[in-house]
Length: 306
Image 1 (spheres, rainbow, N blue to C red):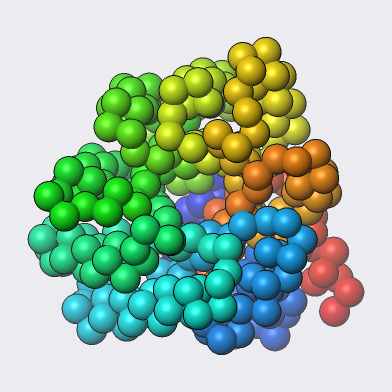
Image 2 (cartoon, rainbow, N blue to C red):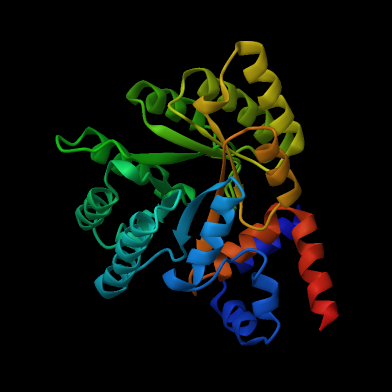
């Protein structure tokens, strides 16, 4: 728990970020979790994952953007990415953080940018609106609902729900009622005990509760976990309830538990690999280390190989 707290605090430390990026070992450390930096660089990896039987959700890393110029750069990358997905007929969605598209600048500005992305994606490409820390939970869901309920909505956007938040059960019910696709994860930010379960056991228990609700009543939910016990529980539940494998998908992060990824594909389950790219990788990288002690050990081994 202490290591997780420290790593999550370091995720937003600009001094540490600059130090790590200057370190010649950083490329070796991040290669496991970050597929590349540019649209052109990542496409071969997407084709390879598709060939292995997995779909992909591509996330151009960056958050808490504060200038319209930065937002324009992010939007341009996503528009080029969508064009490449269609051109190459890739099995890929995109994942977007609303703070990368101007949420901190102006909510209406953010909505206009999201409308451009959703229109460019069309009905062929799913657009996942990622969840960030709790200061953004209500605002993010508000924009998800606003875009979903718009008169010209293509209904091609979805939300992320974090099981460590007390409010998530109520949010799940609203999303199910509206028919919005949900990616269910445990949560990767440091949150206060008055908004989130501090105990891992309660986070896991809430995850299982929400997962079952989505599997029975949700619109093609994404069960985002690397936890073998929860994966086994999901498999048992859908078998008991007669839920077919085409009504949901498992989701995992690029570079984590590749053995489980291969096993799920072999067993005929749909799998989407959440695949980040870009130069602003440090906060994401630190949160991945905080989530699982094995990730720290992997990095340590690579550094020692020097």
